[in-house]
Each structure stands twice: as C-alpha cells, then as structure tokens.
Length: 383
Image (cartoon, rainbow, N blue to C red; front, side, top):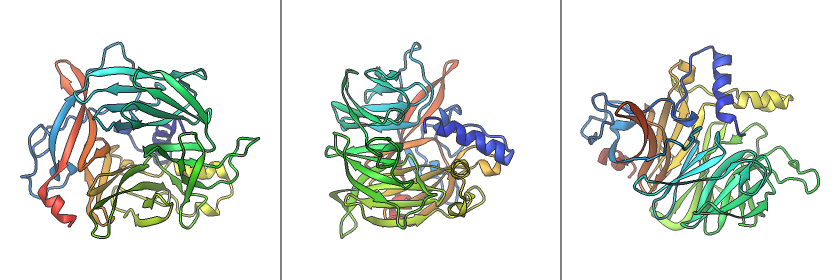
C-alpha cells in the first residue's frame, strides 16, 4: 500500500505506546552519520574484533558517493534504491510519486514520474526497476498498471496489470518479478482469491508464473523484498541461473524461490530481545481488517540478497529504540550474525551492500550512498 510505512509506524506507536523515530525506510529522517569509535566513519572497520556487535563491524565502508540533489528537487521519502547495470542509481520516492535518477558519481540526472492519472503519472507508486540501462518499469498499485520510461523521463507505454502489486519489483531477462495479490477478475478487477504470492510477469503485464507460499497462508503477506540473485549451483557457487528472495510478513520467513516457482530454501527469523513476532494465529481471525491491522505490526521491513549473503532488516520498536536491526545469513540461509545494528541498507550489487545516510556538509545534512563490503571474517563464515 502507498502509505504502508507510515501506517505501520503509527500502529506500532499506538499499539505499543513507545516512542518511535522513523528509520531510513521512512525517509531517512535519522541522518545515519555514524562516527563513534569502531563505527562507519570513512575508515575501514574490519580490524574491530568480532566480539563487538554491530553490522558496521562486519563490513568495511568501501565507498561514499554524495548525492548532488538540487535544492529545488522535492524529496518525500526513499522507499527503495535500484542500481542499473552501468551503475546508475534510482531512488523510489513513493511520497513524491516519483523516481530520482543519479549517475554512478552521484550527479543528479532527473526526476521521472508525477502524481496523477495521466500519461507518466501514478495514483499510488508501488516500486520500479531497471529492465536494462535504457528502460525502467514502474508499477502503479492504484491504477493497476505498469508504466515504461526511458532514461530521458519519457513515458513510452502503459500496460494493464493482472495483479495488485503490494511490494517490491525486480526484473531479469525481460521478466518482471513482483509481490502481489491476484490474479484480478477480468470484469470486477478484484482479486479472485485472498492469497498473496510472487508473480513472474511478461513485459506486457501477463502472469507467466505464480509462486504461492508453501503451504498457502491467508495471513502471510510478501514484503517489499523481492530481489533476484544468481542461483547457487551444485557446488554452491553462483551459477548463471536466477533465484528470488522474499520475506513473508506475519509468518516471518525468508524464502528463496527458483524461477520455476518452486521453493528452494526457507528460514524463520529467530525471536530475540528486539524482534517480537506479530500475532501467529491470524488464520483464526475472520475480520480481514483486523488481519490487516496486525500485519502492520510485523517488524520485518526488507531483505537484501548479495552474491554470498542475505541480510534481513527489521524494526526494533518493540524495545522503544525506533531503529533498524539486522540478521545476516549465508546463501544457504544459515544464520551468521543475529540482531545487530547498522545504517539504513536498501540493496546489493555483487557482494557489496548499498545504503543511504545523511551526513553533515557545512550546516546542512546531505544524502550519501554508502557501499559496504564484507570483512574477511564474515566471508569465511559463509564457506
């Protein structure tokens, strides 16, 4: 939903009665400029002993790219970050109904999209992805359509969707992968059932394949966490094939799905002092609005799949900290690092995790892309 982030934060405060400062997913209102000893301050942190907790002590800050945003460019929030094959970045700003494009050095290229029902507009921007270096697809979950743009910002065409998108989108080999509800009825344009699933779509919007959760669940819902990554081959090295990772809210599962729709691996997020599961008996509730309410209390917000690691982020609001915590898994979904802090992360490229933070520049806070590479001790743990 367009306002999922804000609704979830508001519900957490209302239900739990704790103060909550919005983390990066709610628009980077906390600047994320970490400068304490052993934290990300522009210096390599791999020398910090592994006994010291914190994601920043398991990764080295390899690169910082200041984003050169014109003062006249409005920013609502950053919900997703996508990287093109050539290294350009796209910030999906659902609050502003737009996509912000930057080159690999952080120079602003342009804003794509606007609010509205007309050509190139969105009623509710769900997410967007690079098809290749010259083509972007964006999904509108208000008008149930996908819009294709070139990098000049021109809306090339629109196709009707046969599903209702509810989260993240990725693309590979002219196939679009999206979490959603559907298929939609041809006349009423309402879902024919209430099962959320992962859909593989053609560029024309037709459903090629539908991957349901196993076993099906009317309460579980896929979060904005669809990310494809090379499939591990028999020797457990990345192969030329593709696989997809997704998190299921409420059931709090990480699932790896093959492009044939079959589930390859499943891991359950372990409870800890910061991570408390949402109500597990939602299937017994008949009131759909109540199920929807409880869904928004699920703390999981993102899964990031790199070539060798899978990182899951979740709110720590149940302890009143209002920050994002992380679990780190190897590609076989074995837990390596549990319940650790870190900066706002959004995506990965190769073995590099990519995040955003705000850092002081003069008297202002400016957005920066940060690139983190795993320390040798963490890489060794994946063997």
